[in-house]
Image 1 (cartoon, protein in one colour):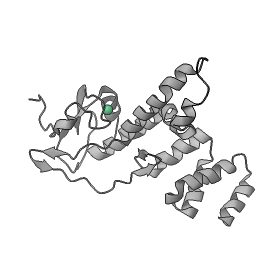
Image 2 (spheres, protein in one colour; image 1 turned 180 degrees about the vertical axis):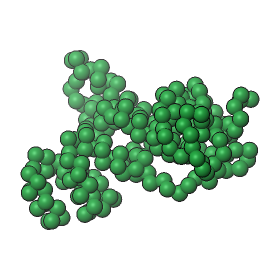
Image 3 (cartoon, helix red, strand yellow; image 1 turned 90 degrees about the vertical axis):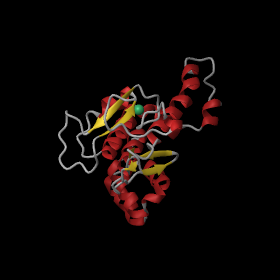
Image 4 (tube, helix red, strand yellow; image 1 turned 120 degrees about the vertical axis):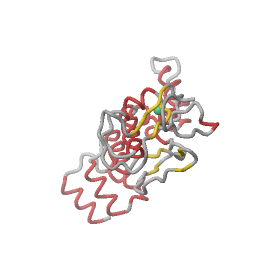
Length: 212
Ligand SMILES: [Zn+2]
């Protein structure tokens, strides 16, 4: 059926999907491949269906297994679609609908913005189906440290910190310190605290950290 060896089994409902992002898969990606030498890869060579965009990102990943490739691809998508993802940080769907942009030069933005946000969010948050080769499921190594916040699943908390810091112009180091103090499960609160301290001096920030 496929010209490639080791094409993973694809569930019927996913038969047109990219394993990385669930968009229509126009191509496929094999790992390990000839462009990056991997020593002691802990799984057999695998081929997964992929869209062209994820394929191009995946080929650049200098990592050791397919799950790390997936993380690399998600980081790439978060970077590339940063502005689309930021829609959901800055607006709710209702706010956007009632934003009063109709008719003006922003009406195009209003129409497409939420849709673009939803697409980017779905792609970044998608997790591929289990990898099964010849009836045998390939065990995922258990170092997945994905971080879910506000409907978006980030490869790790680092990407969430970077994303929020960039979009709200936050001091990323301060955000890390606040999170270390109050716990990563209070991510929303940490972001709110950091937004209060935009433009604060280092002294004011260390005082705030002490008082937390
Ligand atoms: Zn894709």
